[in-house]
Length: 231
Image 1 (cartoon, rainbow, N blue to C red):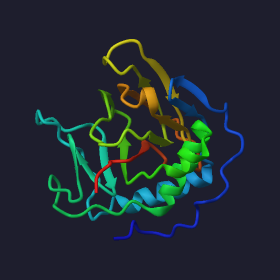
Image 2 (image 1 turned 180 degrees about the vertical axis):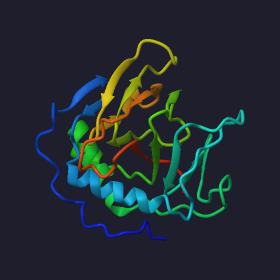
Image 3 (image 1 turned 90 degrees about the vertical axis):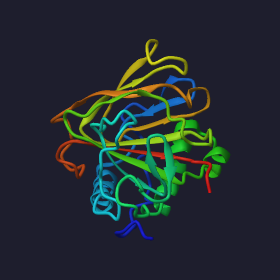
Image 4 (image 1 turned 120 degrees about the vertical axis):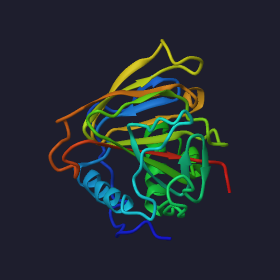
């Protein structure tokens, strides 16, 4: 099943210079401000619009306690629901999710190389799912670990739209120590290695900060590429 739309944008050359260059937040956790150009952000935002039209629509996942998340999600490759992956969205409409697009695989490898500088690790990176989250101005995400994957490969995260406060913690507890990072439109964040299972979350979105030309007039898109380790 196709992910829809044309796919000419990637691989385009990515900008050589970001706002501040890679910043290590914790061992294995790298923030690269301004990694995506406005053109690339706008193109991805258009793909997001296509993904939300189905076959599995944008939805708020329901936690085991029965409470819906404030973040709404559409998935590629594998469908995520708390706390497992399936090919079909049995908790929504039973349809199979869209395939993980080839351009996103290439983009994920470029992102990993940008973060870690290891061409072998980047070439071996084979993400097979993306959780694409949409945050409105009131959405948050509590501190959690990404541990539903069988693989320990890094997670690659891209932000488009409004800025947010991203809290990146430690691997043992949801409380301190943690570092608050402002993620802006176009930013890349990668976490793997010693930080692969660090607790992290979104404490708030900053409405009105979406840059003109990014393709998203309000709210925030966050794409996290992962390796499920499943077949």
